[in-house]
Length: 100
Picture 1: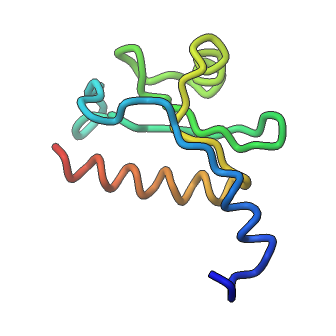
Picture 2 (picture 1 turned 180 degrees about the horizontal axis):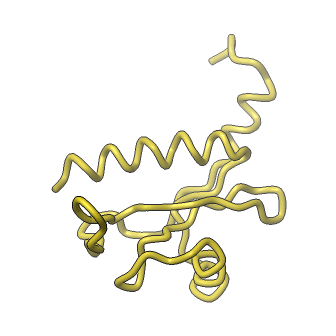
Picture 3 (picture 1 turned 90 degrees about the horizontal axis):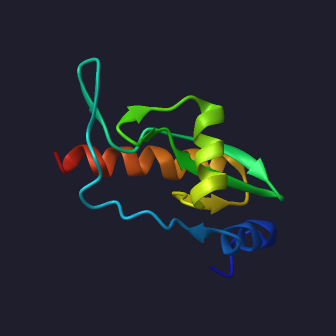
């Protein structure tokens, strides 16, 4: 870890774990299968907030997902950069796909 670039170390410390139980997520039908952790992120107060767009029994639009976050506080994680949020979202998608 001592060889890592200092700003990278600092940005990794800014990650906040999500507060959504990922086990047993509802399966929402989509073309060719179903969605459980379809997501999007947005910047708020300097953090990239990853929120589900597959929620409440349907696929939400981006604004609906943001509004749902503001109402419930539920998120999949908060990150220092959009890139970190995207990397995590891709990894989460792969992990959830294995659990069929």
